Image 1 (cartoon, rainbow, N blue to C red):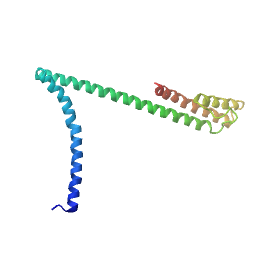
Image 2: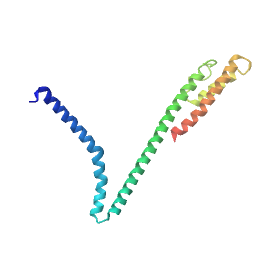
Image 3: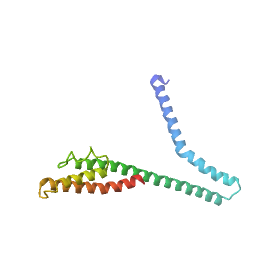
Image 4: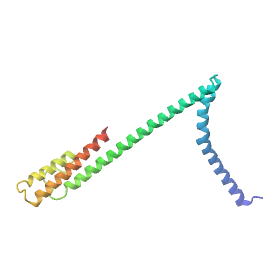
Length: 164
């Protein structure tokens, strides 16, 4: 009657129906039963319908409050993660600015390990060219230090958010 293909399609369709029914029960029936359970138990305890509805409304308010708190915490965590990521990007950007000309490789004892060292290296480079303020390198060093200080201010803001 069904044939080989017809029967296998019927079996597959039944599997999908089971999944759909399971999802519907999970999304619709479970919350209804749990919240409705409190309503029914209130009625069994002899409370009036109005009191039972009030209890159900209070439970919903508590549930909504918990969800709001969870959303706020999640948003705060996301902001913190983004700030930490931005902090690292700013550090990388400052290193790129520092190693452009007129950077002097002999300024420090190796590559800078934090933002304060980057600022210090840029200041040392500027002081190195300070004897000739009209030179192109002095102007580049001034520009470089200015860019690094702007990045450093933003870095401090992001670091404060990241550490909070």
